[in-house]
Amino acid sequence: MPVFDALVFDGGGTLYHFEGDWPAVYRQANAELAASLRASGLELDENSFLEQFSARLEAYHAERDSEFIEYTTAYVLHTLLADHGYPDVPDEVIESSLKAMYRVSQDHWHAEGDAAPTLEALRASGYRLGLLSNAADDADVQSLVDKSRLRSFFDRVLTSAEAGIRKPHPHIFRKMLAVWDFPPDRVAMIGDTLGADILGAQNVGMFAIWITRRADTAANRAHADTINPDASIGTLSELPSLLTDLANAD
Image (cartoon, rainbow, N blue to C red):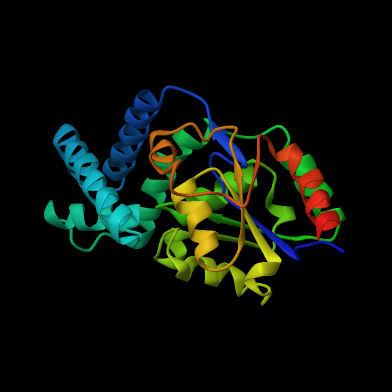
């Protein structure tokens, strides 16, 4: 008998990864954002505006990492435009401009080669699957899931932008669990970040599996002695055999 009824996956660093020169991609993405805003009739000093946009995003990111409240990119852009004399920019202008911005970075995100085969095997074995991602823009993640051709495997793709709260806060994990109404100990979380994925899952009673393929980060190294996953795998392709071993040991 399987140990779990459902499996929840992190997105970036777990199911898909970034390839490219991030600073260059970031600059190009911001340029596309500015061009889209200009095309909508907003007159802005591009250099000054983008400097302020980057600074404000950085400040909000620092705040959200301590409070775990998700400040969306749309919110940041709305407030900055208001400060520049545009307090009533229509939502569709914000959405189209952010879509132009995120389209640049989306070209550099790619599904892991073992993602689709592993998810397909897990679905065929009867597991219910979900995706839970920390992200400042829900539409960006939804587009990445579609681009990666992983949509059909998931019952739910939930982001912190939609939930308003970030991993590891218990609220977002409980919101994910509510999709199936399974007890927490019947659901496992698979992610690459110790602080967000592993600790967050354990705090609500879920089994936490750390995937280490892309987990060599400063944030993870800082938690290496304090956060202990329930199990570890190097790649997604190792997950089905791990689940079999756990079931046989139960």
